Image (cartoon, rainbow, N blue to C red; front, side):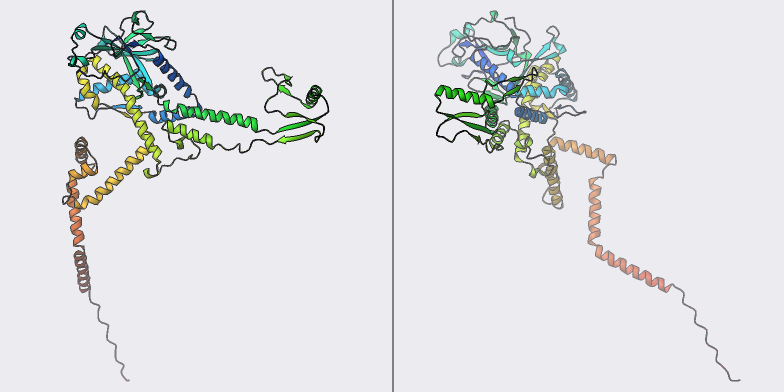
Length: 561
């Protein structure tokens, strides 16, 4: 085995407390070098061989049509890609650092996505990780100029990589081990590294504690040079990660057997077959059998078309389960007779197949309604109309995204430390505030957010008359609208900008106008009566001001002549 290949990131002044519990491990680990804790080195013994077989089985399962459709549905929900946006972006709103440092972190994260070619190959990367239950990348750096950061990321097949934990026990600690003291629980120094074998570990043998690393085939690589991310599902007995497909192994095997048995049953029972009873009289057994064969050869015609050669050949010497039956009958019977066996009944019953198919989808945490023909339409109604399975599926996708984000965490940590953006001891405080925002395509989340916001705004509208009497503005914003301190500051800043630019009206002015409107509404009857009186007075004055009509001329009296 070659010397250690890669790099190690050391923290200054790191102290490990003493504990009777060995260090935690979240990956398949072979323990090397002595002590009662590790008595063997299993580079790929029974443990590794099982892991090899499991990964091969997971990949075979992914080729099954039903399982492939389920995986595609999960990965498509996990990765949302469109023409403009990236499937994932880094979220640093909760990180308490300067704006310049945040910009550098975003730039380095975009660089990592470029190395992975994540925007284009996200679907394949997530699918491989989901099927295998683990993924490994080798972080290629220039050991002479580490400040250049990660130069390349190379994918490593899990079948070719093994992690080893080697214990290094100092002679001083071994000579001082007094019973009842803390030294009794001192596990000593240890080092984790990986062994890469280009040929894989399928045929490796179990070795004991005298295993010589120098003579083995493989490359010893530093643990920090390998970026890993497993499924988080662990086999606690064998200490190895499992795939998300592991619990679907039994369901898929049952579905396969049911489908195969159904095909065999239909092929054997579907066609109608005839029974020929041939009267052989008093012929001896040998002559009776010969007479039966002669009758069969006379009436039986079995011509077979050979698709490979295009020829027609006679296969009378072969008899399949679908052919007719020829039975002899002695003298005294009913003579030669031909009867028909009915074909299989109820061949259209597929309830057992549908049951195991639904069981397979449930084992993969996939709503069966997504892949069955019962629900062809897509309902965009209220969230109360969304199935509970969809809610569970949405939470499952969220857990998958959280788990896969560990790969980004590992790569980002290495890149920031190598570039000198942060110190190794600063990462532990920063990593909790670094999050990754994936695009969502599940309509349920959008509907849920819209309905929740609508309900909150309706509640705020109903509480508005009691504002300043029973409730404060701060209470409504915190408890009803669920705004955080940071969101409130950002929102106040944006509102002030809108008011200054004339896009919005000052709430104080709005309150003044509302008060004036309420006062006008209160005095509306009096104002209306006064307006009516004023209108009547104006009409009277108008009538008074009108000129009086001239009097009519008096009629002349007639006189007698």
